[in-house]
Length: 476
Image (cartoon, rainbow, N blue to C red; front, side):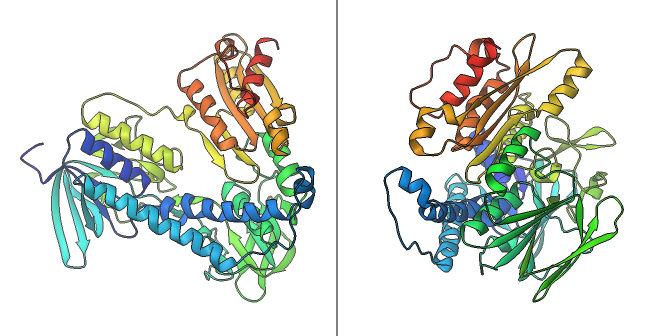
């Protein structure tokens, strides 16, 4: 540790990214402090991944127990399934409390100083913290910003937190409206549509782009529409904007053509969830004190080592990770970035391999992906002069999926025709979020279908869906 500073590393923001960075910093021998103005654990633990998975787990059980056709096929009869909305909500909040406590305790146990207050960069290697007891300044050899993000609310949409709300409020499950409009069909909108429909709500999904699920591979989006949307109480509007949303009873939504901006319909619903993505929480971080300007959307510019950039050049001893950088707005991506930043602080050159970072939507069944979509792969192929090949294998041919009565789904592998290098893998099906990691590791190691096809998978397991895809690739 340097004797010239209060700390080797000060981290602003104690979300999953900041927490992971602090743990790694301690393991590298750095005296570390973490500053948090709100809840320990940030968005993921308190308002995102953790509570939403609790809601999805409970509502998914309800969906399964109410699916008489599925249960009858397994020889099971269940009658009169009931659920307690308040108890489901408590399940989520109790899980949040436990995970938040575990996270805080892990930092304390390792000797990380936790400072409650608003932290901002004061100057090079100095941070000010506004606490309940006033303002103080601390010095650090290196500073890392892990400020996270907040839900984006488009102009014209008024939020009251009760009838019109973002995921921050939806996660509390304070009531179950009969009819919920969901603005946006990304993973947040999809997951809440899954929860609400399982618990008996009707959904209207509004997507400004021409196709539902525009961030997913087109094949997966098409199949997901058939499995996750059409059989359920979900009507959809594509190519339209929620131009104006007014809270109340009812909530009034003016729908406008996305291209002409002319109003085409007016909806009256019981509630509206605004799931239109997230924006960085980068205001009032003191970045101007060190000559750093955020980009047009508010993200902090960084290079591949996670060093913050000013006019294209790294700012000495200043790093940023997580949603605030806009690279990949996922909790585990933030953790990976934090570890990479600490490695570079310690003089060990390392960068983030974004192509190998997987993502998932925890719907029933799940969607997961890693690497490039087919359009992205074809774009890269045209730029670099190679051909793209695609193979698919289906859960309906997988013995374990058939045994579970969960045979809807597909695994799609995108690879280079010449070398066989895997460029992207997309899975829709039971336990897709777990299956994707084999593909993630393959992409991280730039492996080829020519070697992957000869690896051995246990039988009968869901992993054979990928095994079958790799084998099809070498005989394609």
